[in-house]
Length: 263
Image (cartoon, rainbow, N blue to C red; front, top):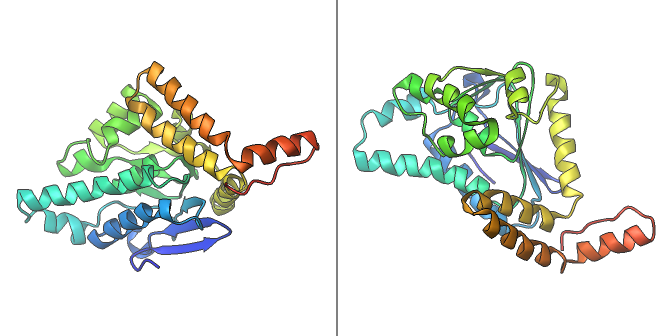
């Protein structure tokens, strides 16, 4: 089990939380690396079928810790800095390639790398109190961090993404929902339940099909339409060979609800 963040696994759902609520859950070098390694292991572990990245103490994540990360970065060599920025980017790659849906359940502060983690999730739920900001220009850096310039425009559009990435301003939960960043905004007391219910619905579905959906959603970014249609033909043909496809057919004939087993 991880030591630099909380992880609870029950009924196929892994619930992760950063565990420094007194500091609004900042990331450290260790938690970055451990999260990356944890997500990298998911394709080899059938026990986890969905991930909820939750909040803790009323906040999601305040980004990189000012004292534990930002300060040391100002003293590093270029080689060391590049190793760090590649490592943070590897967390996003690991989330994208983990093979299971990831749901961000964000309350309160969701900024910097925290906003990136939410962005890299497949589905996102917020509360009215959620404030999301890509703060990189506010600390003298570029907005192009951890894939933000590639992913954020695809979620909310080029102009809106450009505004957030240039200014570093906070996006309210209402804005985020209207712009398509948040799938849903719920009351703070309902956030945990909403995320767990969404995850449970995914776990009860055809999890091999979900893995293929996630794969195609991400791989088709760099494909032409013809390539994407052909890739989906192969993906769907593979899914048609699964037992879940047969189970769904038999259940339909019997006028019953299918019970999927992920194979």
